[in-house]
Length: 92
Image (cartoon, rainbow, N blue to C red; front, top):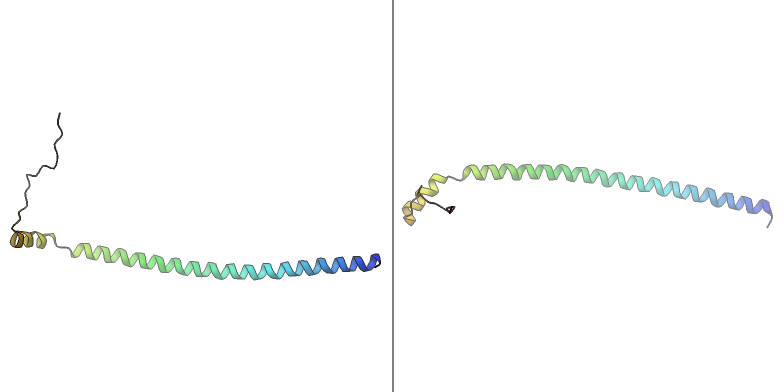
């Protein structure tokens, strides 16, 4: 082959390589962009679910009636609440 044909073939391979890399790069950018959008949507859903769980936890805690529990323990199980309980003492 002559030097001119080798040079044209080298330039052709270089141009083909550049175009191939450019096309693959564009495809990967689109793919990453789509995944980022999905991640953003999932983060929003997660925040909403966490908010719902927090609201349900607060509602549950407010719904617990300690007076009712105390009355039930006194009547059914004959228990009483004592204010003189000492859980531990420090010896000095």
